[in-house]
Image (tube, rainbow, N blue to C red; front, side):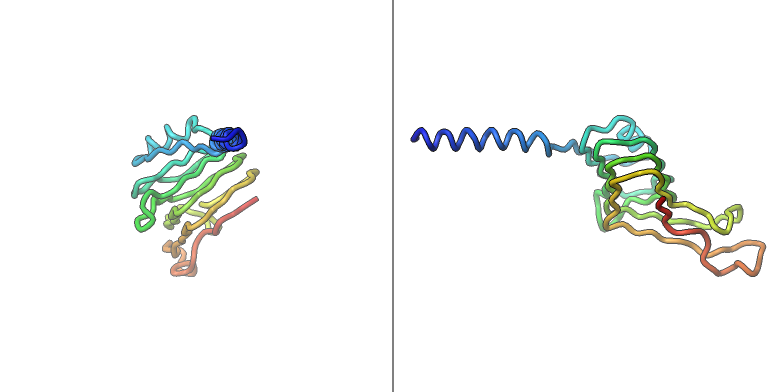
Length: 153
């Protein structure tokens, strides 16, 4: 090997080491609310958390940092959340998740089940938000959409 080729190879390995270290991700798969809560309690920087199919309740995140991605492990059977409350979060990706609102007679007319506030660098991709129809004692509201869609402040 020539000296020039050795220098190029050394530079390439050095560059790979620097770039590889900066883009490395920690990936884990969870299948329950408690496992998700634990994974989110102290996630690694650039963590990718794969969610197995199932219902995870309300996704509530406050003060999360570090480039976390939540992604359904099976895009044909997305992980489901009944609410989304994100506050003071930076660098979060929600990918291939299903968010669904189900009307409850106790809900106010402008129910805000999906909300992002005081956050930045939030990406939502390949995800679905669905609502529900009112069914209450007030006949004028029955059969009409209820709640408010995704609120971003």
